[in-house]
Image (cartoon, rainbow, N blue to C red; front, side, top):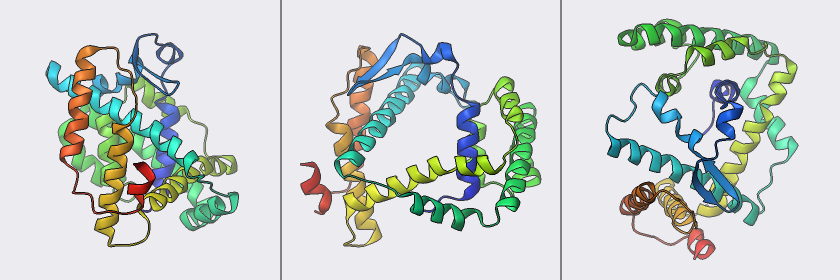
Length: 258
């Protein structure tokens, strides 16, 4: 899967805009621990801000367990990159950026226009949620994928967050250079996937090998979850992950993860 430039751009912008406050980052209430990493209660707050927030205690607990599972996998994935000695050169990053953005000046102009339209559209959609589809078609259809728009809607950004996005300094040359980090991460993820699945077999077979490997990484993670109810739901989520897997068909991930 190739990332579009707007996708990478807005991921970087919204990462800064939606970064938790210092008090949230310093939250002492531990949700989970894994390999020296700590997940605080503040990391679950995003669930409460979503327009489609879970409407029952069990649904909320299941959503929280899903976030913990993704947190665990992100840690395991980074550890796997070290095991596989995954590296991405500066030349690879620059080549990918050049193929993505084309003319830098036009890219900067489009970035600023996309940001301006996105903030305006999110404000309008929050006031008139029934018009979300119409707002997308009018404001963003030529600038942003529908999937990314729906993701921003689901995040339920507060007015404070939207104002922070508006106050982001205009993108200049340094802003383009800042895109190197998400591009580097994307290329590293792709190399890890290739190392895990190999090159033999069909796309579907490689996808199955990847899913099995992802499960094994989560299953083997010795994660500590102090809250008994959340730990129980997390274990059920891991079992549900297992139940959705295809039957192992062999491949590089077998020898790498057994």
